[in-house]
Length: 204
Image 1 (cartoon, rainbow, N blue to C red):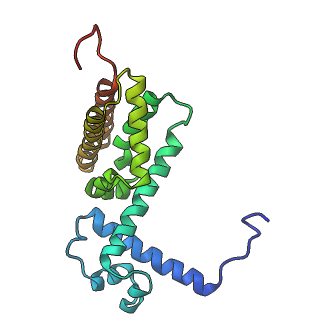
Image 2: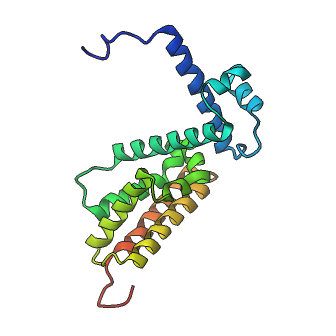
Image 3: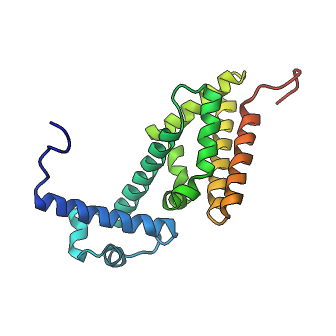
């Protein structure tokens, strides 16, 4: 049976999905604007245009809602990135393209970019599989670049990569489209230098 032939969910389930999506959308807007720290549940439900009493049918606290909204934005970002980064690219080019596209995220997905600019440290959590995926890309690029992934070196490079991406994301939110593209290229070239082997035996 094709998806087009599949029966639609019951009306009550569709209404629940719309209500939850409205709450998530309101939370993402507040996070992107830096207003999540002091927003009340009343303000959230008003922004979502749902009843106050509906909130606790979906979330136990506003912190749980904001975590869910941020997590969804991270998943959206990684899916968006996967569509633009070929799996068969060599590790260095894959990492470079990932960084280049991330620098342009504010042009194509401004809401997601604004959320990540404020919540990107979420990806640095060691037990988050999404962060582990990015760390694996960095590790593979380091190995191909000719450097042994010593623990200290690897952690420093990962921290540098995350820090650079965060800095560009935060900066590009307020830049013009041309400046945003330029910033993405600058970051991509910086990553090239970061993971490339030293020339003529010189120190990194």
